[in-house]
Amino acid sequence: MERNIFLKTNRIGFSQWTQNDIELAKSLWGDPEVTRYICASGIFSMDDIKNRLSTEILNESVHKVQYWPIFELATNDLIGCCGLRPYKANEYEIGFHLRPAFWGKGYAKEAADAVIDYVFSVLKAKKLFAGHNPNNIASRKVLNKLGFTYVRDEFYEPTGLFHPSYELENPN
Image (tube, rainbow, N blue to C red; front, side, top):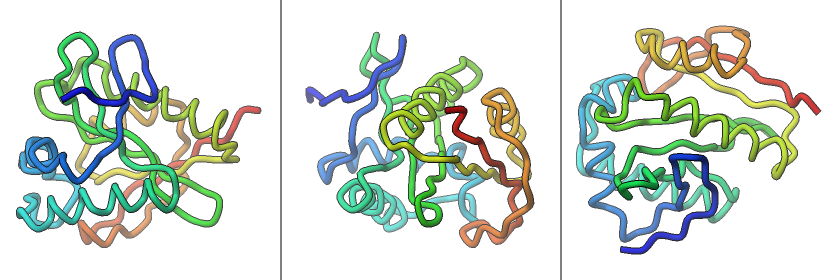
């Protein structure tokens, strides 16, 4: 299927989730290696996957943002997702979920750099929020490389844990 790519980096194309993407959503959120840090059980049921896809589509419709599906431009393979969701009034939260085959290759930082540029230059946000499961060392490393500053631990209901939380100020 030909996808509409609205944002690109050297290696990554950003698209938008649609109702037709259930198989792609299953290949991402159906993988326990991907979901182990994003929900308390560590595993998404089929209903969880459908709900997550619906939430992303709703966020795009209402807020014009989502954790957009990202694809490797060279192969059209789904890397995972990276994008934004509403956090507080006039604030966004950045997040990324990558399939294991794409871990450790710089895709999370490359995708997040593009999203950071988008949120500050296009959406004109003043700052950006991010958090991660306290056990997810890789996400912490990416956020540090991106220039985020730790601000507090914040309770995250889906995992039942306090997640280290960060902010990044708009440099302009």
